[in-house]
Length: 492
Image 1 (cartoon, one colour):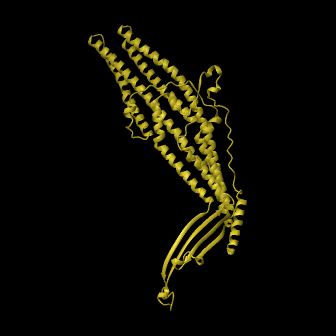
Image 2 (cartoon, helix red, strand yellow; image 1 turned 180 degrees about the horizontal axis):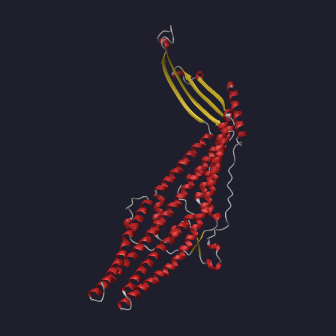
Protein backbone atom coordinates (compact mmCIF):
# COMPACT_ATOMS: atom_id res chain seq x y z
CA UNK A 1 0.00 0.00 0.00
CA UNK A 2 2.92 2.37 0.73
CA UNK A 3 4.10 2.08 -2.88
CA UNK A 4 0.72 3.16 -4.25
CA UNK A 5 0.61 6.51 -2.41
CA UNK A 6 2.81 8.46 -4.84
CA UNK A 7 0.66 7.34 -7.76
CA UNK A 8 -2.57 8.22 -5.95
CA UNK A 9 -1.13 11.58 -4.94
CA UNK A 10 -0.21 12.32 -8.54
CA UNK A 11 -3.69 11.47 -9.71
CA UNK A 12 -5.17 13.78 -7.08
CA UNK A 13 -2.95 16.61 -8.27
CA UNK A 14 -4.03 16.05 -11.88
CA UNK A 15 -7.70 16.02 -10.86
CA UNK A 16 -7.25 19.24 -8.89
CA UNK A 17 -5.56 20.86 -11.90
CA UNK A 18 -8.44 19.73 -14.14
CA UNK A 19 -11.03 21.27 -11.82
CA UNK A 20 -9.06 24.50 -11.56
CA UNK A 21 -8.83 24.89 -15.32
CA UNK A 22 -12.29 23.57 -16.21
CA UNK A 23 -13.63 27.12 -16.55
CA UNK A 24 -11.05 27.89 -19.24
CA UNK A 25 -13.02 27.55 -22.47
CA UNK A 26 -11.44 29.15 -25.51
CA UNK A 27 -13.33 30.59 -28.44
CA UNK A 28 -16.20 33.09 -28.60
CA UNK A 29 -19.41 32.60 -26.63
CA UNK A 30 -22.59 32.63 -28.71
CA UNK A 31 -24.72 35.77 -28.54
CA UNK A 32 -28.06 35.89 -30.37
CA UNK A 33 -27.74 38.35 -33.27
CA UNK A 34 -29.62 41.59 -32.84
CA UNK A 35 -31.55 41.91 -36.10
CA UNK A 36 -33.51 45.12 -36.63
CA UNK A 37 -37.15 44.44 -37.55
CA UNK A 38 -40.07 46.83 -37.99
CA UNK A 39 -42.61 47.34 -35.22
CA UNK A 40 -45.48 46.06 -37.34
CA UNK A 41 -46.24 44.61 -40.74
CA UNK A 42 -47.10 47.06 -43.50
CA UNK A 43 -50.08 44.96 -44.55
CA UNK A 44 -51.28 44.12 -41.04
CA UNK A 45 -54.94 44.96 -40.30
CA UNK A 46 -53.64 46.71 -37.18
CA UNK A 47 -52.05 49.28 -39.48
CA UNK A 48 -55.45 50.34 -40.83
CA UNK A 49 -57.71 52.93 -39.25
CA UNK A 50 -60.34 51.89 -36.76
CA UNK A 51 -63.04 52.66 -39.29
CA UNK A 52 -61.54 50.25 -41.79
CA UNK A 53 -60.31 47.52 -39.45
CA UNK A 54 -63.60 45.75 -38.75
CA UNK A 55 -63.45 42.38 -37.03
CA UNK A 56 -59.92 41.00 -37.03
CA UNK A 57 -59.26 37.31 -36.38
CA UNK A 58 -55.94 36.31 -34.74
CA UNK A 59 -53.85 34.22 -37.12
CA UNK A 60 -51.91 32.30 -34.45
CA UNK A 61 -54.42 29.52 -33.86
CA UNK A 62 -52.50 26.48 -32.55
CA UNK A 63 -54.55 24.18 -34.81
CA UNK A 64 -55.87 26.52 -37.46
CA UNK A 65 -57.27 23.77 -39.67
CA UNK A 66 -59.90 22.97 -37.05
CA UNK A 67 -61.21 26.52 -37.33
CA UNK A 68 -62.44 25.83 -40.86
CA UNK A 69 -65.05 23.45 -39.45
CA UNK A 70 -64.33 20.69 -41.96
CA UNK A 71 -63.96 17.28 -40.25
CA UNK A 72 -62.49 15.74 -43.38
CA UNK A 73 -59.71 18.32 -43.52
CA UNK A 74 -58.98 17.79 -39.82
CA UNK A 75 -58.77 14.03 -40.34
CA UNK A 76 -56.38 14.45 -43.27
CA UNK A 77 -54.10 16.73 -41.26
CA UNK A 78 -54.04 14.31 -38.33
CA UNK A 79 -53.14 11.45 -40.66
CA UNK A 80 -50.38 13.49 -42.30
CA UNK A 81 -48.85 14.40 -38.93
CA UNK A 82 -48.74 10.71 -38.05
CA UNK A 83 -47.75 9.04 -41.31
CA UNK A 84 -46.25 11.53 -43.77
CA UNK A 85 -42.93 10.22 -45.06
CA UNK A 86 -41.20 13.61 -45.15
CA UNK A 87 -42.00 13.98 -41.45
CA UNK A 88 -40.64 10.51 -40.79
CA UNK A 89 -37.41 11.51 -42.55
CA UNK A 90 -37.19 14.71 -40.49
CA UNK A 91 -37.80 12.73 -37.31
CA UNK A 92 -35.07 10.26 -38.25
CA UNK A 93 -32.67 13.18 -38.81
CA UNK A 94 -33.54 14.50 -35.37
CA UNK A 95 -33.03 11.07 -33.79
CA UNK A 96 -29.64 10.82 -35.49
CA UNK A 97 -28.55 14.25 -34.23
CA UNK A 98 -29.80 13.42 -30.74
CA UNK A 99 -27.88 10.12 -30.72
CA UNK A 100 -24.68 11.88 -31.83
CA UNK A 101 -25.18 14.44 -29.06
CA UNK A 102 -25.49 11.70 -26.45
CA UNK A 103 -22.36 10.08 -27.83
CA UNK A 104 -20.37 13.33 -27.70
CA UNK A 105 -21.19 13.78 -24.00
CA UNK A 106 -19.28 10.59 -23.20
CA UNK A 107 -16.09 12.49 -24.13
CA UNK A 108 -16.38 14.16 -20.72
CA UNK A 109 -15.57 10.82 -19.06
CA UNK A 110 -12.74 8.30 -19.31
CA UNK A 111 -12.90 5.68 -22.02
CA UNK A 112 -12.61 2.30 -20.30
CA UNK A 113 -11.93 -0.95 -22.12
CA UNK A 114 -11.04 -4.46 -21.04
CA UNK A 115 -8.87 -7.00 -22.82
CA UNK A 116 -7.61 -10.55 -22.28
CA UNK A 117 -5.11 -12.69 -24.14
CA UNK A 118 -3.82 -16.21 -24.00
CA UNK A 119 -0.95 -17.55 -26.13
CA UNK A 120 0.94 -20.79 -26.66
CA UNK A 121 4.26 -20.35 -28.46
CA UNK A 122 7.28 -22.43 -29.50
CA UNK A 123 10.62 -20.95 -30.53
CA UNK A 124 12.62 -22.46 -33.36
CA UNK A 125 16.11 -23.90 -32.93
CA UNK A 126 17.50 -20.83 -34.67
CA UNK A 127 15.76 -18.59 -32.16
CA UNK A 128 16.89 -20.67 -29.19
CA UNK A 129 20.03 -22.61 -30.22
CA UNK A 130 21.09 -25.39 -27.92
CA UNK A 131 17.79 -25.36 -26.04
CA UNK A 132 15.90 -28.61 -25.68
CA UNK A 133 12.67 -29.00 -27.59
CA UNK A 134 10.41 -29.00 -24.54
CA UNK A 135 12.14 -25.94 -23.11
CA UNK A 136 11.35 -23.95 -26.27
CA UNK A 137 7.61 -24.13 -25.52
CA UNK A 138 5.89 -21.46 -23.46
CA UNK A 139 2.51 -20.09 -22.48
CA UNK A 140 1.40 -16.58 -21.55
CA UNK A 141 -1.86 -15.23 -20.17
CA UNK A 142 -2.91 -11.66 -19.46
CA UNK A 143 -6.02 -9.66 -18.54
CA UNK A 144 -6.26 -5.92 -18.09
CA UNK A 145 -8.57 -2.94 -17.76
CA UNK A 146 -7.48 0.14 -19.72
CA UNK A 147 -8.60 3.73 -19.22
CA UNK A 148 -7.94 6.84 -21.28
CA UNK A 149 -9.20 10.30 -20.42
CA UNK A 150 -8.66 13.55 -22.27
CA UNK A 151 -8.46 16.38 -19.73
CA UNK A 152 -10.62 19.14 -21.21
CA UNK A 153 -8.47 21.97 -19.88
CA UNK A 154 -9.20 24.41 -22.70
CA UNK A 155 -12.78 23.49 -23.56
CA UNK A 156 -12.31 21.56 -26.80
CA UNK A 157 -14.76 18.86 -25.68
CA UNK A 158 -17.16 21.36 -24.11
CA UNK A 159 -17.31 23.36 -27.33
CA UNK A 160 -17.85 20.18 -29.31
CA UNK A 161 -20.78 19.18 -27.11
CA UNK A 162 -22.13 22.72 -27.34
CA UNK A 163 -22.01 22.51 -31.13
CA UNK A 164 -23.73 19.11 -31.06
CA UNK A 165 -26.46 20.40 -28.77
CA UNK A 166 -27.11 23.35 -31.11
CA UNK A 167 -27.20 21.07 -34.17
CA UNK A 168 -29.71 18.82 -32.41
CA UNK A 169 -31.87 21.82 -31.54
CA UNK A 170 -31.66 22.87 -35.19
CA UNK A 171 -32.84 19.39 -36.24
CA UNK A 172 -35.78 19.70 -33.86
CA UNK A 173 -36.63 23.06 -35.44
CA UNK A 174 -36.30 21.48 -38.90
CA UNK A 175 -38.84 18.89 -37.82
CA UNK A 176 -41.21 21.62 -36.63
CA UNK A 177 -40.73 23.44 -39.96
CA UNK A 178 -41.53 20.22 -41.81
CA UNK A 179 -44.73 19.91 -39.80
CA UNK A 180 -45.73 23.44 -40.77
CA UNK A 181 -44.95 22.77 -44.43
CA UNK A 182 -46.77 19.44 -44.59
CA UNK A 183 -49.92 20.66 -42.82
CA UNK A 184 -49.93 23.72 -45.06
CA UNK A 185 -49.60 21.59 -48.18
CA UNK A 186 -52.41 19.28 -47.04
CA UNK A 187 -54.74 22.24 -46.40
CA UNK A 188 -53.80 24.02 -49.66
CA UNK A 189 -54.29 20.88 -51.73
CA UNK A 190 -57.59 20.14 -50.00
CA UNK A 191 -58.97 23.62 -50.70
CA UNK A 192 -57.68 23.49 -54.27
CA UNK A 193 -59.56 20.19 -54.67
CA UNK A 194 -62.80 21.68 -53.32
CA UNK A 195 -62.39 24.72 -55.57
CA UNK A 196 -61.82 22.54 -58.62
CA UNK A 197 -64.87 20.45 -57.77
CA UNK A 198 -66.95 23.65 -57.59
CA UNK A 199 -65.59 24.80 -60.96
CA UNK A 200 -66.40 21.36 -62.35
CA UNK A 201 -69.97 21.67 -61.05
CA UNK A 202 -70.28 25.11 -62.68
CA UNK A 203 -68.96 23.80 -66.01
CA UNK A 204 -71.34 20.83 -65.99
CA UNK A 205 -74.33 22.98 -65.01
CA UNK A 206 -73.56 25.49 -67.75
CA UNK A 207 -73.12 22.66 -70.24
CA UNK A 208 -76.58 21.38 -69.27
CA UNK A 209 -78.04 24.87 -69.78
CA UNK A 210 -76.33 25.24 -73.13
CA UNK A 211 -77.51 21.79 -74.11
CA UNK A 212 -81.06 22.91 -73.39
CA UNK A 213 -80.45 26.04 -75.49
CA UNK A 214 -79.24 23.88 -78.37
CA UNK A 215 -82.38 21.74 -78.04
CA UNK A 216 -84.56 24.85 -78.33
CA UNK A 217 -82.59 26.08 -81.34
CA UNK A 218 -82.97 22.68 -83.02
CA UNK A 219 -86.70 22.78 -82.32
CA UNK A 220 -86.98 26.26 -83.87
CA UNK A 221 -85.04 25.03 -86.90
CA UNK A 222 -87.39 22.06 -87.28
CA UNK A 223 -90.33 24.46 -87.06
CA UNK A 224 -88.87 26.62 -89.82
CA UNK A 225 -88.12 29.59 -87.52
CA UNK A 226 -84.36 29.01 -87.04
CA UNK A 227 -81.25 28.76 -89.19
CA UNK A 228 -78.35 26.36 -89.52
CA UNK A 229 -76.10 29.25 -88.49
CA UNK A 230 -77.85 29.56 -85.14
CA UNK A 231 -77.58 25.82 -84.58
CA UNK A 232 -73.85 25.79 -85.39
CA UNK A 233 -73.16 28.68 -83.00
CA UNK A 234 -75.10 27.05 -80.15
CA UNK A 235 -73.38 23.72 -80.71
CA UNK A 236 -69.93 25.37 -80.86
CA UNK A 237 -70.52 27.07 -77.50
CA UNK A 238 -71.71 23.82 -75.94
CA UNK A 239 -68.65 21.95 -77.17
CA UNK A 240 -66.34 24.69 -75.86
CA UNK A 241 -67.92 24.43 -72.43
CA UNK A 242 -67.83 20.62 -72.49
CA UNK A 243 -64.11 20.76 -73.35
CA UNK A 244 -63.41 22.38 -69.97
CA UNK A 245 -64.75 19.36 -68.09
CA UNK A 246 -62.03 16.73 -68.83
CA UNK A 247 -59.22 19.11 -67.82
CA UNK A 248 -60.98 19.94 -64.54
CA UNK A 249 -61.63 16.24 -63.88
CA UNK A 250 -57.92 15.53 -64.37
CA UNK A 251 -56.91 18.29 -61.92
CA UNK A 252 -59.41 16.94 -59.37
CA UNK A 253 -57.82 13.49 -59.69
CA UNK A 254 -54.33 14.95 -59.30
CA UNK A 255 -55.28 16.64 -56.03
CA UNK A 256 -56.86 13.47 -54.65
CA UNK A 257 -53.72 11.53 -55.49
CA UNK A 258 -51.52 14.20 -53.86
CA UNK A 259 -53.54 14.18 -50.66
CA UNK A 260 -53.30 10.39 -50.42
CA UNK A 261 -49.50 10.48 -50.72
CA UNK A 262 -49.28 13.34 -48.19
CA UNK A 263 -51.02 11.17 -45.58
CA UNK A 264 -48.75 8.22 -46.36
CA UNK A 265 -51.06 6.13 -48.55
CA UNK A 266 -51.13 4.99 -52.16
CA UNK A 267 -52.47 7.54 -54.69
CA UNK A 268 -55.79 5.72 -55.18
CA UNK A 269 -56.55 5.26 -51.48
CA UNK A 270 -58.70 8.38 -50.95
CA UNK A 271 -60.49 8.69 -54.30
CA UNK A 272 -63.81 7.29 -53.05
CA UNK A 273 -63.62 9.31 -49.83
CA UNK A 274 -62.80 12.63 -51.49
CA UNK A 275 -64.99 12.31 -54.59
CA UNK A 276 -68.16 13.82 -53.00
CA UNK A 277 -67.87 17.60 -53.32
CA UNK A 278 -67.86 19.84 -50.26
CA UNK A 279 -68.35 23.58 -50.02
CA UNK A 280 -65.38 25.79 -49.21
CA UNK A 281 -65.49 27.21 -45.66
CA UNK A 282 -66.43 30.72 -44.65
CA UNK A 283 -63.31 32.82 -44.17
CA UNK A 284 -62.61 35.80 -41.89
CA UNK A 285 -62.35 39.17 -43.61
CA UNK A 286 -59.05 40.01 -41.88
CA UNK A 287 -56.36 38.03 -40.08
CA UNK A 288 -54.08 39.68 -37.52
CA UNK A 289 -50.45 38.64 -37.96
CA UNK A 290 -49.26 40.18 -34.70
CA UNK A 291 -45.82 41.83 -34.76
CA UNK A 292 -42.62 40.91 -36.62
CA UNK A 293 -40.94 40.24 -33.27
CA UNK A 294 -43.61 37.65 -32.43
CA UNK A 295 -43.12 36.10 -35.86
CA UNK A 296 -39.39 35.59 -35.37
CA UNK A 297 -40.00 33.85 -32.06
CA UNK A 298 -42.46 31.45 -33.68
CA UNK A 299 -40.91 30.60 -37.05
CA UNK A 300 -39.06 27.25 -36.82
CA UNK A 301 -36.87 28.04 -39.81
CA UNK A 302 -35.57 31.13 -37.99
CA UNK A 303 -34.96 29.01 -34.88
CA UNK A 304 -33.07 26.42 -36.96
CA UNK A 305 -30.89 29.12 -38.55
CA UNK A 306 -30.11 30.59 -35.13
CA UNK A 307 -29.10 27.20 -33.70
CA UNK A 308 -26.84 26.50 -36.68
CA UNK A 309 -25.17 29.85 -36.09
CA UNK A 310 -24.69 28.80 -32.46
CA UNK A 311 -23.10 25.53 -33.61
CA UNK A 312 -20.79 27.34 -36.05
CA UNK A 313 -19.69 29.72 -33.26
CA UNK A 314 -18.93 26.79 -30.94
CA UNK A 315 -16.84 25.11 -33.64
CA UNK A 316 -14.55 28.15 -33.64
CA UNK A 317 -13.74 27.20 -30.04
CA UNK A 318 -13.07 23.60 -31.06
CA UNK A 319 -10.56 24.79 -33.66
CA UNK A 320 -9.02 27.38 -31.31
CA UNK A 321 -8.37 24.73 -28.64
CA UNK A 322 -5.77 23.17 -30.95
CA UNK A 323 -3.52 26.17 -30.23
CA UNK A 324 -3.06 24.77 -26.74
CA UNK A 325 -1.64 21.44 -25.55
CA UNK A 326 -3.96 18.49 -25.22
CA UNK A 327 -3.50 16.44 -22.03
CA UNK A 328 -4.48 12.78 -21.89
CA UNK A 329 -4.43 10.66 -18.75
CA UNK A 330 -4.00 6.95 -19.42
CA UNK A 331 -3.92 4.01 -17.12
CA UNK A 332 -3.87 0.23 -17.08
CA UNK A 333 -4.34 -2.32 -14.34
CA UNK A 334 -4.11 -6.03 -14.98
CA UNK A 335 -2.47 -9.34 -14.44
CA UNK A 336 0.04 -11.34 -16.47
CA UNK A 337 1.29 -14.90 -15.86
CA UNK A 338 2.57 -17.98 -17.62
CA UNK A 339 -0.09 -20.15 -16.04
CA UNK A 340 -3.81 -19.58 -15.75
CA UNK A 341 -3.76 -20.59 -12.08
CA UNK A 342 -1.37 -17.75 -11.25
CA UNK A 343 -3.08 -15.11 -13.41
CA UNK A 344 -4.73 -13.12 -10.60
CA UNK A 345 -2.20 -13.72 -7.86
CA UNK A 346 -0.55 -10.78 -6.12
CA UNK A 347 2.79 -11.14 -7.85
CA UNK A 348 1.14 -11.21 -11.29
CA UNK A 349 -0.22 -7.65 -10.93
CA UNK A 350 0.64 -5.09 -13.62
CA UNK A 351 -0.21 -1.41 -13.71
CA UNK A 352 0.61 1.61 -15.77
CA UNK A 353 -0.25 5.31 -15.40
CA UNK A 354 0.81 7.99 -17.87
CA UNK A 355 0.08 11.62 -18.58
CA UNK A 356 0.38 12.39 -22.29
CA UNK A 357 0.79 15.83 -23.82
CA UNK A 358 -0.02 16.48 -27.46
CA UNK A 359 0.71 19.96 -28.71
CA UNK A 360 0.64 21.00 -32.35
CA UNK A 361 2.71 24.16 -31.86
CA UNK A 362 4.98 23.13 -34.72
CA UNK A 363 1.90 22.83 -36.96
CA UNK A 364 0.54 26.25 -36.03
CA UNK A 365 -0.07 27.23 -39.66
CA UNK A 366 -2.59 24.45 -40.21
CA UNK A 367 -4.27 25.16 -36.86
CA UNK A 368 -4.71 28.84 -37.70
CA UNK A 369 -6.02 27.88 -41.13
CA UNK A 370 -8.68 25.71 -39.48
CA UNK A 371 -9.59 28.57 -37.16
CA UNK A 372 -9.91 30.93 -40.14
CA UNK A 373 -12.14 28.39 -41.91
CA UNK A 374 -14.36 28.09 -38.81
CA UNK A 375 -14.57 31.91 -38.61
CA UNK A 376 -15.61 32.09 -42.27
CA UNK A 377 -18.18 29.35 -41.76
CA UNK A 378 -19.68 31.27 -38.83
CA UNK A 379 -19.78 34.46 -40.88
CA UNK A 380 -21.60 32.69 -43.69
CA UNK A 381 -24.02 31.10 -41.23
CA UNK A 382 -24.72 34.56 -39.76
CA UNK A 383 -25.56 35.82 -43.25
CA UNK A 384 -27.89 32.83 -43.77
CA UNK A 385 -29.59 33.60 -40.45
CA UNK A 386 -30.14 37.25 -41.40
CA UNK A 387 -31.43 36.18 -44.82
CA UNK A 388 -33.83 33.72 -43.17
CA UNK A 389 -35.22 36.53 -41.04
CA UNK A 390 -35.74 38.76 -44.08
CA UNK A 391 -37.37 35.97 -46.05
CA UNK A 392 -39.72 35.24 -43.14
CA UNK A 393 -40.79 38.88 -43.03
CA UNK A 394 -41.22 38.96 -46.81
CA UNK A 395 -43.22 35.73 -46.76
CA UNK A 396 -45.60 37.13 -44.16
CA UNK A 397 -46.02 40.53 -45.84
CA UNK A 398 -46.80 38.79 -49.14
CA UNK A 399 -49.27 36.42 -47.48
CA UNK A 400 -51.05 39.34 -45.79
CA UNK A 401 -51.46 41.36 -48.97
CA UNK A 402 -52.42 38.27 -51.00
CA UNK A 403 -55.16 37.34 -48.57
CA UNK A 404 -56.52 40.87 -48.25
CA UNK A 405 -56.71 41.34 -52.03
CA UNK A 406 -58.22 37.89 -52.52
CA UNK A 407 -61.06 38.72 -50.11
CA UNK A 408 -61.73 41.96 -52.00
CA UNK A 409 -61.69 40.06 -55.30
CA UNK A 410 -64.18 37.56 -53.85
CA UNK A 411 -66.73 40.26 -53.14
CA UNK A 412 -66.63 41.64 -56.69
CA UNK A 413 -66.73 38.25 -58.39
CA UNK A 414 -69.59 37.05 -56.20
CA UNK A 415 -71.73 39.95 -57.38
CA UNK A 416 -70.60 39.40 -60.97
CA UNK A 417 -71.58 35.71 -60.82
CA UNK A 418 -75.01 36.52 -59.41
CA UNK A 419 -75.67 39.26 -61.95
CA UNK A 420 -74.47 37.14 -64.89
CA UNK A 421 -76.81 34.31 -63.85
CA UNK A 422 -79.73 36.78 -63.76
CA UNK A 423 -78.73 38.19 -67.15
CA UNK A 424 -78.55 34.72 -68.72
CA UNK A 425 -81.99 33.80 -67.36
CA UNK A 426 -83.54 37.03 -68.66
CA UNK A 427 -81.85 36.65 -72.05
CA UNK A 428 -83.38 33.18 -72.45
CA UNK A 429 -86.82 34.50 -71.52
CA UNK A 430 -86.55 37.36 -74.00
CA UNK A 431 -85.31 34.99 -76.67
CA UNK A 432 -88.33 32.77 -76.15
CA UNK A 433 -90.51 35.87 -76.52
CA UNK A 434 -88.70 36.88 -79.73
CA UNK A 435 -87.34 40.11 -78.25
CA UNK A 436 -83.64 39.25 -78.82
CA UNK A 437 -81.79 36.97 -81.19
CA UNK A 438 -79.76 33.88 -80.27
CA UNK A 439 -76.50 35.82 -80.13
CA UNK A 440 -77.68 37.66 -77.01
CA UNK A 441 -78.51 34.36 -75.30
CA UNK A 442 -75.19 32.75 -76.17
CA UNK A 443 -73.24 35.80 -75.08
CA UNK A 444 -75.11 35.91 -71.74
CA UNK A 445 -74.46 32.20 -71.16
CA UNK A 446 -70.77 32.59 -71.97
CA UNK A 447 -70.51 35.51 -69.56
CA UNK A 448 -72.31 33.50 -66.89
CA UNK A 449 -69.86 30.60 -67.22
CA UNK A 450 -66.85 32.89 -67.05
CA UNK A 451 -68.15 34.80 -64.02
CA UNK A 452 -69.14 31.70 -62.05
CA UNK A 453 -65.89 29.93 -62.87
CA UNK A 454 -63.88 33.01 -61.87
CA UNK A 455 -65.77 33.27 -58.57
CA UNK A 456 -65.19 29.60 -57.74
CA UNK A 457 -61.48 29.97 -58.55
CA UNK A 458 -61.25 33.14 -56.43
CA UNK A 459 -62.93 31.44 -53.46
CA UNK A 460 -60.35 28.67 -53.69
CA UNK A 461 -57.53 31.23 -53.87
CA UNK A 462 -58.87 32.98 -50.77
CA UNK A 463 -58.92 29.75 -48.77
CA UNK A 464 -55.42 28.88 -49.99
CA UNK A 465 -54.33 32.43 -49.11
CA UNK A 466 -55.59 31.95 -45.56
CA UNK A 467 -53.59 28.72 -45.30
CA UNK A 468 -50.49 30.45 -46.68
CA UNK A 469 -50.84 33.18 -44.06
CA UNK A 470 -51.24 30.68 -41.23
CA UNK A 471 -48.23 28.79 -42.56
CA UNK A 472 -46.12 31.95 -42.86
CA UNK A 473 -46.89 32.84 -39.24
CA UNK A 474 -46.44 29.29 -37.88
CA UNK A 475 -48.04 30.52 -34.72
CA UNK A 476 -48.64 28.31 -31.73
CA UNK A 477 -48.41 25.07 -33.68
CA UNK A 478 -48.69 21.95 -31.56
CA UNK A 479 -45.38 20.11 -31.56
CA UNK A 480 -46.48 16.53 -32.21
CA UNK A 481 -42.91 15.34 -32.81
CA UNK A 482 -40.47 14.90 -31.26
CA UNK A 483 -41.84 13.90 -27.89
CA UNK A 484 -40.89 16.01 -24.89
CA UNK A 485 -38.69 13.27 -23.45
CA UNK A 486 -36.59 13.34 -26.63
CA UNK A 487 -36.20 17.09 -26.42
CA UNK A 488 -34.85 16.71 -22.88
CA UNK A 489 -31.50 15.56 -24.25
CA UNK A 490 -31.24 18.74 -26.27
CA UNK A 491 -31.88 20.98 -23.27
CA UNK A 492 -29.39 19.24 -20.96
